Image 1 (cartoon, rainbow, N blue to C red):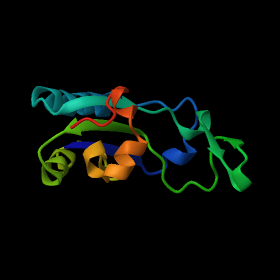
Image 2: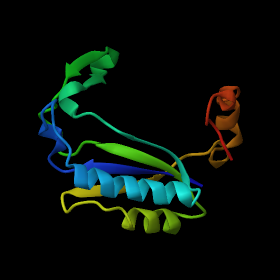
Image 3: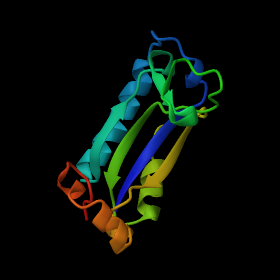
Image 4: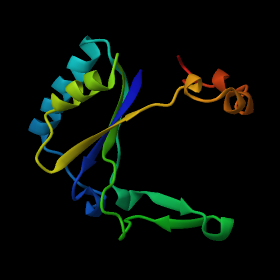
Length: 138
Protein backbone atom coordinates (compact mmCIF):
# COMPACT_ATOMS: atom_id res chain seq x y z
CA UNK A 1 0.00 0.00 0.00
CA UNK A 2 1.24 3.44 -0.88
CA UNK A 3 0.59 6.42 1.35
CA UNK A 4 1.34 10.10 1.06
CA UNK A 5 2.33 11.79 4.25
CA UNK A 6 1.54 15.47 3.70
CA UNK A 7 3.38 18.02 5.85
CA UNK A 8 1.15 20.94 6.80
CA UNK A 9 3.21 23.63 8.55
CA UNK A 10 0.79 26.02 10.23
CA UNK A 11 1.61 29.60 9.30
CA UNK A 12 3.36 28.61 6.05
CA UNK A 13 0.46 30.06 4.07
CA UNK A 14 1.84 33.55 4.79
CA UNK A 15 5.58 32.72 4.59
CA UNK A 16 7.70 35.10 2.57
CA UNK A 17 9.33 33.87 -0.66
CA UNK A 18 12.78 33.99 0.98
CA UNK A 19 11.86 32.03 4.12
CA UNK A 20 14.97 30.58 5.76
CA UNK A 21 15.09 27.08 7.23
CA UNK A 22 16.67 26.22 10.57
CA UNK A 23 19.73 24.02 9.85
CA UNK A 24 19.22 22.00 13.06
CA UNK A 25 15.62 21.19 12.10
CA UNK A 26 16.71 20.29 8.57
CA UNK A 27 19.38 17.94 9.97
CA UNK A 28 16.78 16.24 12.20
CA UNK A 29 14.43 15.86 9.24
CA UNK A 30 17.24 14.41 7.10
CA UNK A 31 17.90 11.77 9.79
CA UNK A 32 14.20 10.88 9.69
CA UNK A 33 14.27 10.71 5.88
CA UNK A 34 17.32 8.44 6.08
CA UNK A 35 15.46 6.14 8.49
CA UNK A 36 12.58 5.88 6.00
CA UNK A 37 15.07 5.08 3.24
CA UNK A 38 17.01 2.57 5.36
CA UNK A 39 13.75 0.77 6.20
CA UNK A 40 12.99 0.46 2.48
CA UNK A 41 9.64 2.25 2.71
CA UNK A 42 10.52 5.60 1.10
CA UNK A 43 9.47 6.03 -2.53
CA UNK A 44 10.06 9.77 -2.85
CA UNK A 45 9.90 13.02 -0.92
CA UNK A 46 9.93 16.72 -1.71
CA UNK A 47 9.69 20.02 0.08
CA UNK A 48 7.65 22.83 -1.44
CA UNK A 49 8.37 26.54 -1.75
CA UNK A 50 5.94 28.83 0.09
CA UNK A 51 2.54 29.60 -1.45
CA UNK A 52 3.70 33.17 -2.09
CA UNK A 53 5.63 31.73 -5.06
CA UNK A 54 2.76 29.53 -6.24
CA UNK A 55 -0.41 29.91 -8.25
CA UNK A 56 -3.85 28.34 -8.14
CA UNK A 57 -6.03 27.64 -11.13
CA UNK A 58 -9.75 27.53 -10.35
CA UNK A 59 -12.59 26.92 -12.79
CA UNK A 60 -15.63 29.08 -11.97
CA UNK A 61 -18.23 28.45 -14.63
CA UNK A 62 -15.81 25.99 -16.25
CA UNK A 63 -13.34 28.74 -17.22
CA UNK A 64 -9.77 28.70 -15.86
CA UNK A 65 -8.85 31.62 -13.57
CA UNK A 66 -5.28 31.97 -12.27
CA UNK A 67 -4.66 33.41 -8.81
CA UNK A 68 -1.07 34.13 -7.80
CA UNK A 69 0.03 33.34 -4.24
CA UNK A 70 -0.12 33.99 -1.43
CA UNK A 71 -3.70 32.84 -1.03
CA UNK A 72 -5.52 34.97 1.53
CA UNK A 73 -8.28 32.41 2.06
CA UNK A 74 -5.89 29.51 2.77
CA UNK A 75 -5.96 28.19 6.31
CA UNK A 76 -3.59 25.28 5.68
CA UNK A 77 -1.09 24.66 2.89
CA UNK A 78 1.36 21.90 2.05
CA UNK A 79 5.01 22.34 2.91
CA UNK A 80 6.12 19.02 1.46
CA UNK A 81 5.34 15.33 1.26
CA UNK A 82 6.69 11.82 1.51
CA UNK A 83 5.44 8.91 -0.57
CA UNK A 84 5.94 5.65 1.30
CA UNK A 85 5.04 2.03 0.67
CA UNK A 86 4.06 0.07 3.75
CA UNK A 87 1.85 -2.85 4.68
CA UNK A 88 -0.97 -0.94 6.38
CA UNK A 89 -2.48 2.37 7.42
CA UNK A 90 -1.25 1.67 10.94
CA UNK A 91 2.33 1.32 9.71
CA UNK A 92 2.04 4.64 7.86
CA UNK A 93 0.78 6.27 11.05
CA UNK A 94 3.67 4.73 12.99
CA UNK A 95 6.15 6.31 10.57
CA UNK A 96 4.42 9.69 10.78
CA UNK A 97 4.58 9.55 14.58
CA UNK A 98 8.38 9.27 14.36
CA UNK A 99 8.76 12.48 12.35
CA UNK A 100 10.68 15.21 14.22
CA UNK A 101 7.89 17.71 13.52
CA UNK A 102 7.39 20.83 15.60
CA UNK A 103 4.24 21.77 17.46
CA UNK A 104 3.07 23.92 14.53
CA UNK A 105 3.24 21.05 12.00
CA UNK A 106 0.65 18.44 11.11
CA UNK A 107 1.14 15.34 8.98
CA UNK A 108 -1.91 14.20 7.06
CA UNK A 109 -1.77 10.59 5.88
CA UNK A 110 -3.64 9.61 2.72
CA UNK A 111 -3.65 6.23 1.01
CA UNK A 112 -2.92 6.38 -2.72
CA UNK A 113 -5.64 4.95 -4.93
CA UNK A 114 -4.66 1.90 -6.92
CA UNK A 115 -6.40 0.90 -10.14
CA UNK A 116 -7.58 -2.28 -8.39
CA UNK A 117 -9.56 -0.09 -5.95
CA UNK A 118 -11.99 0.86 -8.74
CA UNK A 119 -14.86 -0.94 -10.44
CA UNK A 120 -14.30 -2.75 -13.74
CA UNK A 121 -16.15 0.09 -15.51
CA UNK A 122 -13.79 2.72 -14.10
CA UNK A 123 -10.74 0.56 -14.87
CA UNK A 124 -11.93 0.27 -18.49
CA UNK A 125 -12.44 4.06 -18.70
CA UNK A 126 -8.85 4.52 -17.51
CA UNK A 127 -7.42 1.81 -19.80
CA UNK A 128 -3.96 2.73 -21.02
CA UNK A 129 -3.31 5.07 -18.11
CA UNK A 130 -1.55 2.32 -16.14
CA UNK A 131 1.42 2.54 -18.50
CA UNK A 132 2.30 5.98 -17.12
CA UNK A 133 4.87 6.19 -14.31
CA UNK A 134 3.41 4.95 -11.01
CA UNK A 135 -0.16 4.86 -12.32
CA UNK A 136 -2.12 1.85 -11.19
CA UNK A 137 0.74 0.20 -9.31
CA UNK A 138 -0.31 -2.86 -7.38
